[in-house]
Length: 193
Image 1 (cartoon, rainbow, N blue to C red):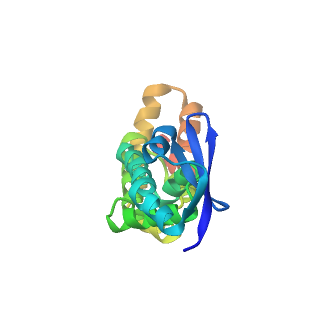
Image 2 (image 1 turned 120 degrees about the vertical axis):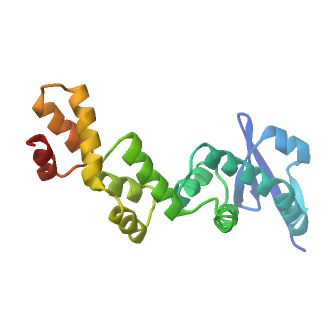
Image 3 (image 1 turned 180 degrees about the vertical axis):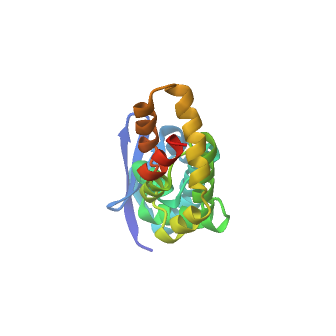
């Protein structure tokens, strides 16, 4: 089996770990000390064992903590892993594991996102569509979610909030509703009732 150099670059309280020329990821000093890793040549078999026994479980734990706080889309999870310098191979493996387990599911995420917007901060379909696109949700899923979204009821809820925030000020109510992504014709329809 071919041996490659395992290289460690310390950056504050973390190490960037390289195997050969490939950056594997960013890991805390405590983990590197626990494994007792050093800059040295190691076999591919030994490296795969370290990957399986330490690096992948550590990375899964990080992602689990992330999605426990709030459900995430696949794109958000990938961006998180990329920000923390994990290799494409580790990222792909973890994303696939979490998708198989149902912990990363773009449809479920989009439904939850739309429901929370409807209940907590009512917004228009345009706003939801733009937000879901930013989070990497496919057009098919977005259309499916928006087909079940009651924009009229969301507008009524948002208008009730606007009346409390801007009593008697029609112009500010209109701007408030427009910032939330509601169609201008729908806004004037509800304001003129």
